[in-house]
Image (cartoon, rainbow over all chains, first blue to last red; front, side, top):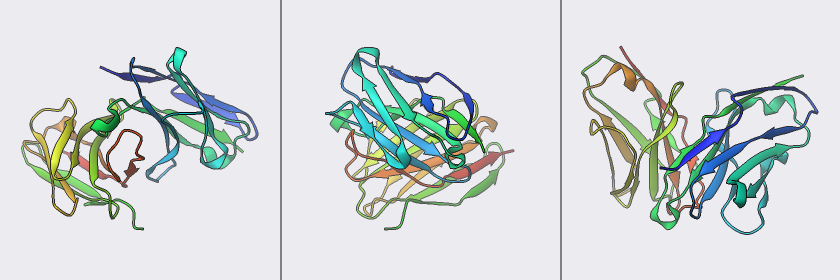
Amino acid sequence: AQSVSQHNHHVILSEAASLELGCNYSYGGTVNLFWYVQYPGQHLQLLLKYFSGDPLVKGIKGFEAEFIKSKFSFNLRKPSVQWSDTAEYFCAVNALGAAGNKLTFGGGTRVLVKP
Amino acid sequence: KAGVTQTPRYLIKTRGQQVTLSCSPISGHRSVSWYQQTPGQGLQFLFEYFSETQRNKGNFPGRFSGRQFSNSRSEMNVSTLELGDSALYLCASSLLGAGADTQYFGPGTRLTVL
């Protein structure tokens, strides 16, 4: 069965610091990769996704992620965080392709940005 | 467009009871998926419905079931509730339910089982 692991459970950093969140998945076939964010009191929302093409994908709010197929990784980055980036971040994989939707999520990383 | 809506937002039930949760997808979306979110197990896939058919299923017992109506609205039912069923239940909809589709999540229904 496929699995997704996120390296850090909690990250604390100051405003303007750079952020990198690790995500590794275990599945040998074609996958679609996602990063979702859950701001305090809000719904899960999509930050960015990868399904084909350029392995460096850009998302909303200045986030980007790089898909490295050989490492089964999809790490999320932001060069300079703001206090408003305080949230929980989830990496997710869908390995079903056209067969449907079944997201396997990582355990999440809680990010606290100190002003 | 209105987002995914879920009703009710909060529920309190006792062990042994059953519960039905409702989800209205974004207009035009045909795929509806359900997820359970708990502090211990994180986000886990329950099932996906597409065109009124259950297309994919996660590793949950048969007490968890669902259905989808012709207007794509979906319900999930949990029978014989257990304490461990306390969780936030999230519904997500997507246009076609293909792997690269973005799933849009609702606010969830928080179920507490006493």
